[in-house]
Amino acid sequence: MTAMREPSQSLALDAAPKVSVALSVFNGGDVLLSAVQSILDQSFRDLELIVLDDGSTDGSVDQLRKIPDSRLRIIQDGVNKGLSGRLNEAIDLARGAYFARMDHDDISHPERIARQFEFMEANHSVSLVGARCVTMNEQERINGVLPGATTHDEICRHLWVGFNLPHPTWFGRIEWFRAYRYVDPGPYCCEDQELLLRASSTSCYHTLPDQLLAYRVRTRTAWRKLWKTRLAWCRVQVSYFLAQGRYHEALLAVGVTIVRVLRDLVGRIVPRGYGAALAPDLVRSWEDLVATKRSRGERTN
Figure 1: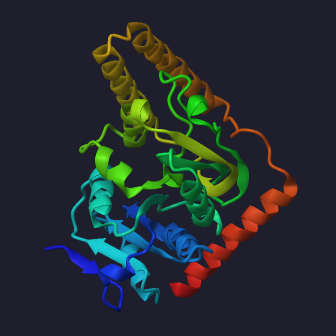
Figure 2: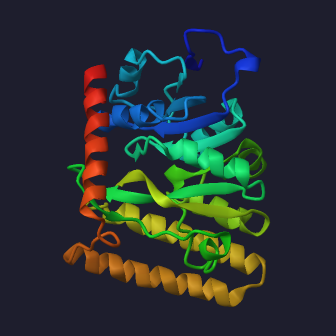
């Protein structure tokens, strides 16, 4: 039986929030509280945060029960379903008109949800909006930015390469997520790219130009995991292109995968950076924000 912590007051239908934020977690450790706090501390207050425990064994989700915020919903059933299954579950549980993503080890800027909500309210033709990301290492030092594209045409310019639309920054209308959903079980560690590819011809994507999320990058990703992800994404692309008779794009996808694997091999010898350097004042402001969220999480714990 699913154990679900609902807010202390009943959830009346007429009190449904405007935005539902979904956060799936598996063994979030000591970074989970910071991620959760960064959503609950948003300047945009009319939201709910649905935390789905995907069979964690480290007790990290239990610490969230100490947070006295009625907008926090915790879903626990002791089962490991995977990210796609959990996100589909969140889509079904969501009460907001908009649905947003968050990962358990990242930090959202306090204005993230407000800016994405305002953009979507003013741009009804857009299906999904993301945001640019700064990157941080295991020591929570800001060390670069993720590559990004702004308009739909830019995001979808080279489908055989993929999409620069970071998954933990997604924000869209709940109807779009319910229409497309995630493939379950999803392709290994690339369920977001599969959904973007599948929906690209009938959707409109956009990325806000400001950095609104700190994305945690591990210094060394396990080679086996990285290879499995590359191979899974290549299979998705090739299947998609071959089904449409777009053979040259299938070949390009294979070529891109080979180049990426070679680059990964080089990167294990000579570590590479993450995009252009940030202005010192921006680095300081983000590191101060990350430190503040960690401090708040530690007080909660």
